[in-house]
Length: 182
Length: 182
Image (cartoon, rainbow over all chains, first blue to last red; front, side):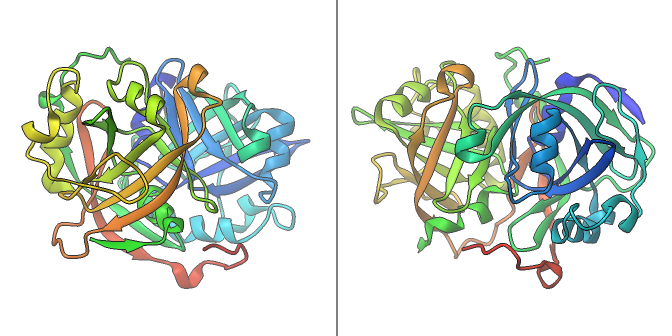
């Protein structure tokens, strides 16, 4: 996996793929599926996401303030659904779904080698956690697997229905560069 | 346009399409392009979005507490970029881009007839507006154009590069219904 600047998080998350989130607490790693997330700010790169007490990962994230947002592609679609169907309270999901962990650099939560990209994050703001379970994370390190052939992410439409990435449309020449982006 | 329940907002927004946002203040309507948004809660349906003082719409949204999130499809891609390239301070964007307005039901901001869907929203929480320009909106009414042939939305990867909706993948049979959704 190749490292890219944390400022590039928006390229991965603004398109709205469904993601996996890993945590690690007291030596135990867990992974969950997450659809409610957004970019909030370019610099420093801030990400909003909803993880609630109904998620087993909520306690680990609250406790450690660390997680990894991993971006799965089409080949992992069934695992993505099933990861959301069971709880880390009862099962080691890395083992059950044959996911390969790798240590990150900035956080204790593991990277998922089987994903297209991994964003190491640290909780930056908990103001709206009590009200909406809305965590604001700062992206610290990003890793991309540049060797995989399947790069299509999937977008959750609710109730297990997904849209798969289709064609690319490049209108960058048309885009005014009036706002300086990293 | 057909009306559907406001609780269905997640089906439109969770996949992460780039959207247009309309406002209306003192009789003047405006529209902007927005990529930073997310679902926050199913019931009542809450949406997070970043609209900053650099956006001309910021003042209208702050003033009126109302907006419409309109979802454009591939046929509007060039307009979506150009709408983000100019400011409502200097131009009537509805006129420039040939967009057709229609009055909504719950808010004064107009619907955009040319879009696939329109979500009428009211600001529900401004706690993080000062810190991150993060508005939390409640979806009030949703309108869908069921007659259009082009239904593919586009997802911004940053810098004017987009991913177009591809195939549908239906894994709803595999999805455990352990969490009751509307």
